Image (cartoon, rainbow, N blue to C red):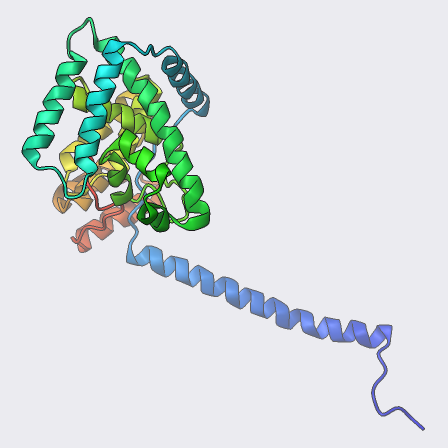
Length: 316
């Protein structure tokens, strides 16, 4: 009795495989063509370049973090630091209590903090900074404890549970952590959307603002660069003056930073289209081989609506 089914031989298998390859190749080519059309269409709709980034030297950043740890370790627990820390915690508690403390009470506690700090007295400035550095390290540790819980429980659940970890973070940060949430710095799964050095740098800047000193006084250059880059990328489009000032300072540190393109983008996002187009047109003349600049300049001329690329929350 003959078997009705066709037996597979090495020859027939090879022929079958040979027939399948052109079909598979055609499918892959079709998929590749579809992706290419998609990306070309997206770029044609909005050819706005990405906001430039300064070059962050990782070795310098790590050295700055090590310096902070060393300074925090040199912090002395004396009457000055205890009184200053107590005033700081009282201010944080008033900022985060429910219901919120009235503005007059916040202002009163702010004055008390500045009086305890004796800043900008030159004799106390370094001590003031060292207390802040110690608290910045404690804040970062408390933040990472909360982030570790968020990885398994979700950030919303951790905040709602109001356990000792989140209470400890609020004690050290006051309303500062709420700013992190509004700016999308911390994701629901406990990941950070910024460089790991950013939290303690922002904390130390806030410490200086509260004390009435220059915002980046005693910062290393790399710390200022990281902070300025954060201001540029995470400030509301309406605060163009603040972002333009950040660009000027970044350019003073990183001479390779594409400051002109950054200015055009900031003005574009602020709705100042004519100014943005003037810069883009000048860039087009200076960089005739850069087709992306040419497309962007043409886009600004034809489409005056801004295309914000930064988080909506402001940075002060």
